[in-house]
Image (cartoon, rainbow, N blue to C red):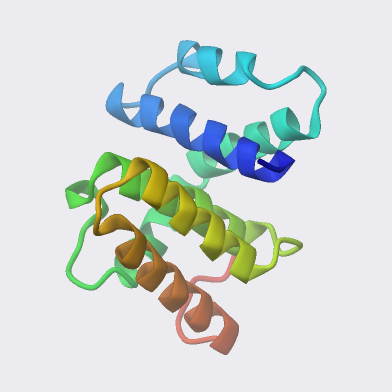
Length: 142
């Protein structure tokens, strides 16, 4: 597993823990961060994702809802919504990461942690988010 893949997986686990704790706290960061070497690129990127998602959650969730056709973020499975949050954060704010990598990594996380339907659902939402932003069709400016 490459460095950024490990960071995404750890970020997903942290965000899941925060989500089910309804806001969570710094204790939620413990186990997953201990698995990443201090000062490593994986730890830095994981922290960046977690901070970016938690600080930009309202914008990210609006993007997800806008392109998830009849689904509110609250109705989504906890794993699915947090995979989407990580990926949409990267699509919106990490322009150096190719969109195909973001989508592929999210689908892989969905296969590993989600349901049978998670991969296609996440792929569809992320494709619509990317296309709307790429084509400039109503995505929020950040």
